[in-house]
Amino acid sequence: MPLMSRVGIPRQSCRVVLKGTREWVGTFAGVGWSMNQTGIQIELEMTEGNAILLSLIKRIKGITGMLSPIGPPGDDRPSLFNRFHHVRRVATVALCAAVESQNEGSIIDLARVRRLAWLHDVNRWPFAHNGERGLYDQVADFPVFFQSNSIELSRLDTEDLKNINLKDSEKLTTEGMVVLAADRAMGIIEDLLFTITALGVDPSVVPDSVVEYTALPLKDYQFRVRLWEMRRLFYELHATGQYLDVFDRIAIAFASSIIKRCCQLRGTFEIGSGFSNGADDVRTNFQNPILFPIVNDEVSHSSFIRDKVIKPLIVHFEPNTLRMMTTIDDQQAVDLAIACGSLRREEVVKVYPDLEFIESKRPDLRFICD
Image (cartoon, rainbow, N blue to C red; front, top):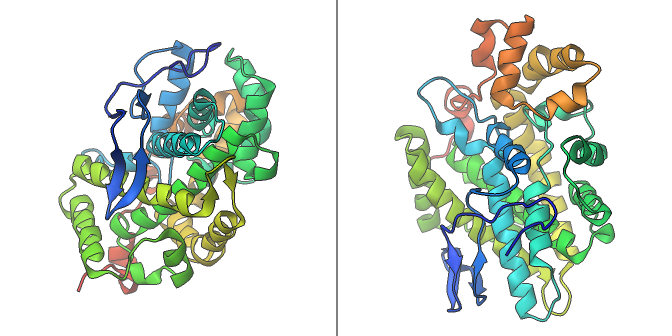
């Protein structure tokens, strides 16, 4: 099943294939999608297709997700935060939701769902939100980005990509709504899981309304023990492969659960008010006041990155700033900043995410499993 007939977004290597039998995807604690669709491939890795498009999608392996994927030599834990992993999980959840809605009578173009999911973050700048705010309009750049890379997209696809990033469900096609729901649900679950298991913040900081919306049983002792085991995999053992496997399964399960509980699947897929209101509540009561000040300001050193890397490169690349900033990744941006003289080599450590921040500077927030 091709992803895009004109530009050839590739099919993925078949790590997970859903057969015609009843099968659960990403299940944890009984949460997940019951799938009954022959031959639907769940996105895990890109292997073939248009070379230009492949390089654009693979580039986001080096782009900030929640945190930057670059870190000190010998520590590969930051790679867990790269944007590619987020997009891969979004594509998986979006296809799961689309197939489930199809089974309930909805008419959905699975190829468009797959295409929109893989492309919705493809034109991010190095360090993503930590470098873009107030300096770059990702939505406005979509048409120019695809044109400059000789990627032919329909106007409908381009408008959907814009409105997915604007979170404007009223202007989206059905396929666009599925991807928006997957993107928002996955972003919320990822933020919560990373905050607790990677940064080491105690689950008690999560407001009750967020716990209820996500259905993450953060007050259940057995679940907290599971999260603590993930914390040990990340922090003590540096077991990135094992951590990623568990993270994927839990994140996909609970993001899917939000969509299943809060969106209309039967007849025509719709993002319900309960979904949007709950997601807005997460941003208002958790992400904005609690998470972002820690992640962006303290752990990611966003001000330092903007002043020492992003702003100097904007000047350096003129008049081709938009084109150049969407061709390099976090590490390449750092290397160029050093070459330009805006960043000294001894300062590079300040670009890396401070994974010790909670342990060393905010022990009052530390996750303790008792």
